Image (cartoon, rainbow, N blue to C red):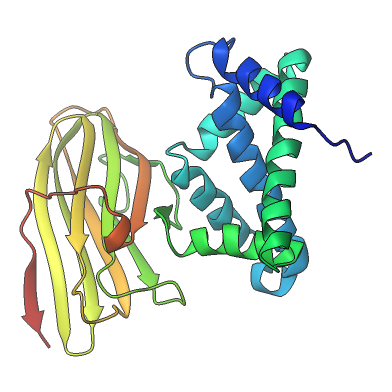
Length: 267
């Protein structure tokens, strides 16, 4: 059923969503949630319209992650918030009414500018896939390292795809738990005849990150690196958890200043 909201209803609905936030801590507020859900619905329209470009789940997940990143939330934030709204039907109904109003506004503007509905979805959602911060980590996110493990090295490699751009910024994030001692980390990028790399050593448990700014006039062929996990004298294992490799466009990076120097070698 197509429900249309008049100007007064729209104002009242928006005010109701923003005047009193009924959500607990950790749950996305109604108005931001409505904006995210609207983008998600447009993303689904992209997938349905251009299924050939989203033929595997990884690309669909990248699209979803990109939408979340644009709103400064994670997919886990959205999933947990949807669970809360699903258990509070009255709030969910209000939010979804706002979603319909947002989509109707966007479609009306698109029609006024001469675009059709599928083009609107494509311009809004696909652009975010290669224009915003995206987690491109492709391996297991949690690793257990023990004295009897076959290896204490976690390595990764990301081959060039259509979303690589010169000047991209990559940030490797993770946290350590258990009996982790020193961890030697490197993050590298290969170009024709050149390799850029950053190396550092972290100690102790907690969150760690290393950042590599790519050369602004060249697109990398490959991003790769490794974590070499040292163990304390204890027999207890160490855990490397919540691994992420965040790709950021240089023009969208939020004043990232890495204390770790970048080095280059010619090949």
